[in-house]
Length: 399
Image (cartoon, rainbow, N blue to C red; front, side, top):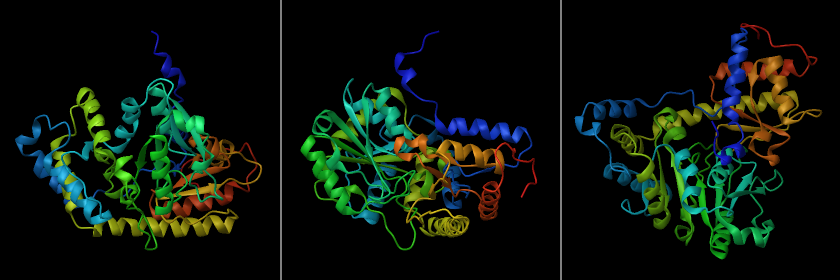
């Protein structure tokens, strides 16, 4: 059987390989601590679960939902944006329900990219951006980011011939994997750049509510004129610990929203209406459950940063996300250090090289395990750095 040529351009999905390696270690009896995937270990708030149960018992939710999302859900999204960002949205033309934000991110290049078109992707960046461009037979163009620039791209360094061919520009702040943040001044620059070159900004704002120390991440749509050139995607996955529920939304430029809706109408039948009812409960419900979960992640951030710094890592304390972007020790590359921690500590982290060439020299640590496991992981890393190469991780019970 022959698969399409485009599939040969797609690398193995990094997290699937991490899962395979973790399973192999567990099969050997190793007690593995996974700091690899950003999947919250904290439960979905009770009021959201109860809303799902009530809605699922209503036979009216058992039929196909509206392709664009229920009216109630789209209105809840618009109201949330007005409260959170001061952005006015028309729920009929500027809001679209998604089966998780990843679905929308992956499909937007199908809508706007023809073979040979360029797609600007941050480097390092979430792998789906580049993969989606390849699936649409476009050409992802990595825009470098660096620690020195605060992990925001230098748009002035994009060559004019590339910008002229570009149709989309993916941005993601707060950022995965670097945990970098962007201020309104950068978004103003991005909007001006997009208008100059007729590019659609696709802003992945998944982590806007996971922020610390009083920081409130902005929306690109808060910038004057942004709605002319930007669509923003958000997920309930991280904010409300709903990764398995698969619900999100796209908002912003009405033409982009309409085009994405037209594609979805032909390839899926929308999100289960009962899950959308739960989404309404999340967006309209109390903020305390999210605040309490963010407090947990901040506590873990502080503990992990202090522990890693004590070992000798030059790691920054991020203002947002539940990730740490950790420079690897001298003598390692990111894949080699990841392998060393697997073999010697039974700790899973994500190699920075999996996020692009610009991620080399770093690993991403996800703080989505219980507090005691965060402390234990730091202890294991400390021990692993003193162990010679070749000694495998021990079976369960190792501390």
